[in-house]
Amino acid sequence: MEGNVELVLNQERISAAPGAIMLVPENTPHGFSNPGAKRAKLPDYVLSCDSREQYFEELAELTKNGRQPNQEELLEANASL
Image 1 (tube, helix red, strand yellow):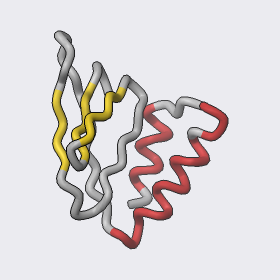
Image 2: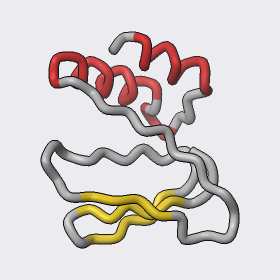
Image 3: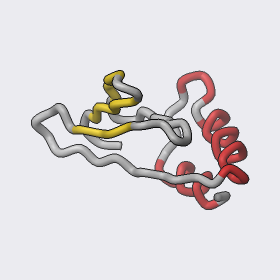
């Protein structure tokens, strides 16, 4: 993610800075906006239920103790989908 992104989730506004991971539960009304003056980029992953748990377990391991995974590690985790 680049720039600042705002997630609207069930009428609640949540600000996210670069490096944040946002999870939108299934069947939850949501939207995204860019509240800043700079361009923002946000990867959007839609995960099937079968692979979702494994993917988030890998993300949890990669981000343990506040660690910031690099792009290659994130792409490897994504490949498991």
